[in-house]
Structure formats: structure tokens, C-alpha cells
Image (cartoon, rainbow, N blue to C red; front, side, top):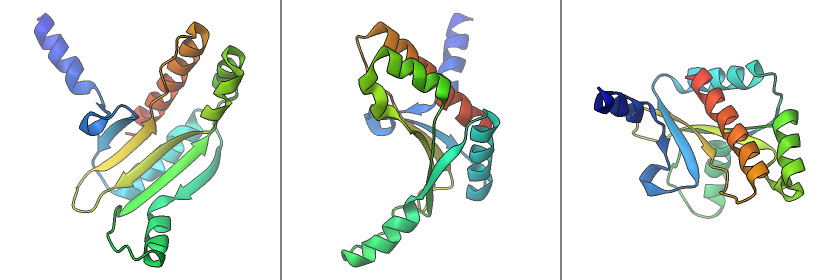
Length: 152
């Protein structure tokens, strides 16, 4: 029974750090890009958070690629939502004023050409020996993960 529970738990984990990388936590979703994107926006706002900026990454790459002679389409669609939590940010910055660099938080939603999946991803907070900061970063990571789970 313990092995069954462990196997189920592993299947529920996100694709943390695709391809062995440790800089991102990535979730895979199916459905139309626009639906997943709209669900993400609603999930962020549903937590009482205000999206301060939306970066249209696929559009930017397509526009600038022409200027530098690149033609490969990296994303069919890709957007980044930036937002902040007054509570989590306050805890982080009280624990270490230099953690200001973590704000604003961002979650990206994207679709890769030739792949039926839509991905949602966030930067993995760095490891720290500061116990208070680690607690705040764990709080941040929980918030980001919960937002994505709500969106899915």
C-alpha cells in the first residue's frame, strides 16, 4: 500500500525542472491555449492579486527575430504574468532586504510548436541558509503552485 501511495504522489508532482534543470517548476496542461491562459489570469486574480504587467513573449521573439535574422518559431503562444503579494513580499523582505530582487513574481503560460500541451511555469526560488527567508520562499512557492493548480 505504501508503494502505491508513493507512486500516486510521484504522478501528481509537476515536471519540476524539465530536462534535469533546477531553475523552473513546470506543469503540463491540455486544452486550448487561450482557455489555459484565461484560467491562469483568473487564478491569480482569484487570490486577490493584481497583475501588474503582461509580457507577450512569443510576439516579442517573432518581432525581434526578424531584426536579427532568426526565423525559428520558438513558441506558438507565450505570455508572462507579473504580480506581487504584499504579505509574502513583506515576509521575504523582512527576512532579507536583498530578496527584493524576487519581486515581482511571474508565471508563464506557453505552447511550443508541434506539442499538444500548454505549459505553466515559474522560477524556482533559490536555496538559502537563512531560515526565515526559506520559510518565506516556501510560502511563495506554495502560492505559485496553488495558483497554477487552480488554473488547471
